[in-house]
Image 1 (cartoon, rainbow, N blue to C red):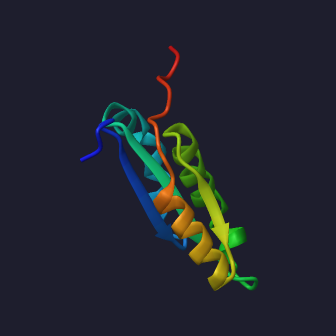
Image 2: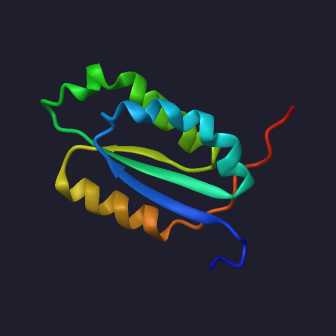
Length: 100
């Protein structure tokens, strides 16, 4: 358990699940539970998800930013390794409270 009671989640995804649109609705609960979401989005240079998945990617990115996390896109295997290790080693603090 974290001494700061912060929960750091690293999600690796292709970002193509329609359920991604539900993520922004979870932001208040994630903030209350001090969950920091980092996402590594896997794409390829020929990936059509860059066009068809844009609304899903935006929902994921919004959730990452709102929880104090990072949203990262990777194309190459080497980039994935670097981003994953950086995300795993990242010191996280919960996102600041939402202003009314």
